Image (cartoon, rainbow, N blue to C red; front, side):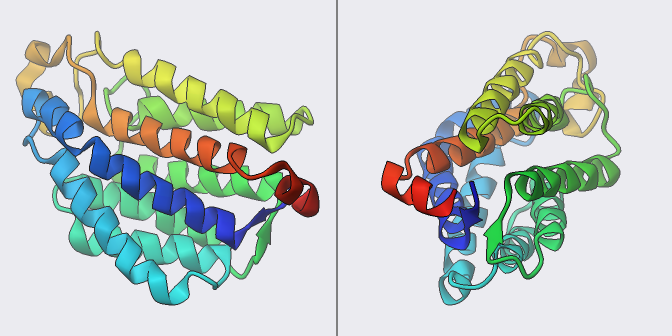
Length: 220
């Protein structure tokens, strides 16, 4: 199926709503091993995203994602702003000028975003960061799409992988960021960045799965 800019906007809008709903939960996770502001910062950032997207919501997919990235860089404190901002800026650059996005284009954009996060944060898997949710999820999406699975199925599988990666951060010792200062005391806590990353990918999966069947057919 081809993904339209309206669907990309719908994903970002859905995620902004989820972040608002989960703000206290995300902040609670961060209070245990970080600065205690992840949910607050992400909510502020995505409310800014909605404002910045309003005048460009009919533009191409690349513009939507790059606008999102710039809004996050400019409004989110801590590590979240630069990392999420980089994710969306890189993903947007991969979709520059595209009014419709193919399955492989979308997965390629997610891969570009992940690469940007890894480069910016210098994090690897099992460092107890957002990479632990993003990396297995995007790998699974690529696998499914390359095998010819429908995009909705690929993204649902990716969200499941992100959830697994998120939960797998609980027994890990943090090796990056503020949480790393705690050493062994970071063990037993779920990483807030991995959690918000899971929510982002679940929002993407759900936003495309909720499109009416007639719309799916029209864009497939």
